[in-house]
Amino acid sequence: MSHKPVFRLILILICLLLQATCFADTLRRAVLDLPSSFDPRLNVTNTDSLLTLELFAGLTRIDGQGQVVGDVASRWERLGQGTTYRFYLREDARWSDGKPVVAMDFVQGFRHLLSIGKPLPSWFLPIQSDLPRDPATHTNSEPTLGMFAVSEQILDIVVSSPSEQLLYWLADSAAMPLPSHLFAESGYGWARQQPLVSNGPYQLAEAEPQRLYLRRSSFYQEAENVAIEQVVYERLPETITLVRYLAQSQADVASGLAYFQIKGAKNLPGYQFSRQRRMTLLMFFMNPQAPALQDLRVREALYMAMDRNMMVHNRDKGEEAMFGLIPDMAHYEALSGTKLTQSQQREQARQLMKAAGYNQDKPLLLRILTSDREPSVIDAALAKRIWADLPVKVEIEKAPFREVVKRIHAGQFDMVRRMWQAEHGDPMRMLDIYLPPNLDWQDLPQEKLRGLLEVVSQSGRNRNQAIKELERFLMSQYLTVPVLQNVTFHLLANRVIGWSDNALARNESRWLSLVE
Image 1 (spheres, rainbow, N blue to C red):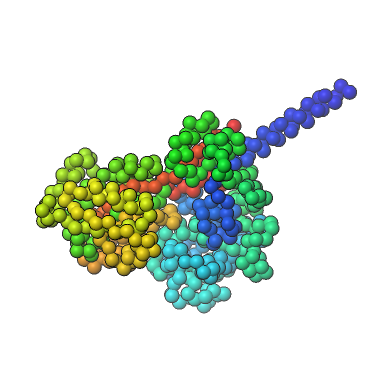
Image 2: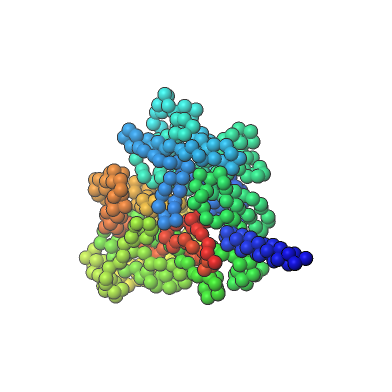
């Protein structure tokens, strides 16, 4: 009898210890939606993409600091003229059913991406190479696919020109492998089978209408470096305020929140506020072939006179003013503005307009094309007000979004209010919009541009420095008026360790840990 209370006490202490350990190893993430599919190639929302990165592992991965690192690929090299990238797969990479991850899984995944009928992501276009394959090594693949299984552990990707962007592309959710051994049996239905077979840091343990449970996968090749044992995704309900939901559910991370939600919840006890830059840029994109904007002085004047702080304040979304083309990211610093005051910049802009032959009696006639969506129209109207005394007479042309896109591609505009978003983390992706064939360089310094692009492709470790020189050159042509950078807002429990505000950091659970 005397031992039973002690035994019971020990049991209670063990149970409490187990509960505390389980709680410490479980990360709860509140999101706006749950995935429509677990097939990485069918992603629709930001949550879809994040869950894909939790459940699947690509050739490369973006680490916690926004750097590209190997994942299923242990290493890679460039062959020939640099147009063939050879990836060596880790022999310990496994699917969650124990089958090895092989090169054909990536070939089949890309083939699936090309066949599902949705528009091919633009960052994969160079992979569709017409270059001839080597029949001795590139077998079991279409010649135009550009992706070849040399052996089970060696994968070649052929591109039309050398591009380090490839390493960032391959970390994207659309580039995840497909379990070809299951696809051979079940076709596109492989992702609906239970349990879901994946090869990432986590496995899908249970799915409920409002909640998903993930557990750390022992099959993942870096499982020993994954700190959090369990991740729970909870859908934010529409019938309860964010503050009350967080207080009741004890969620550790609430992501993708509107700025007004953050304003109401930033003082919530036990939580900290995170403001993460995004790879997006709100701009007024200029057509240098349009008669109104052929004069470089005019384009520079429009850039100088833009009141970015007014635009940021008017939108009231917590965004950040931008003076260059690429935001801050891992080892890449955004260009800053001049040290002139706004009134000094405006006066400099007036002098440029005067030198170009414009005055109040002879104003510049400028058409701003914008979609007919209310936020876009408001941005264009504010820009019209800012530029009114340069002197510029602005006419706003509203059109449905699809029509705006068609007119951009056809070059039928003077200036367009545009939001440019990079789908992956390479800083070069932010510059693609200003490069041929996206922009006609007929009357612009093409030889200088080609030289800088060549330096970028050959620069190796100094690539970011070469990209910075290219960005400065593009800025010297004043092809756009950058205005502001979007941001994403998060609320984090104080026990979450490893969260990054870097624009490239995806803040996957893989890179986080918890403390009590």
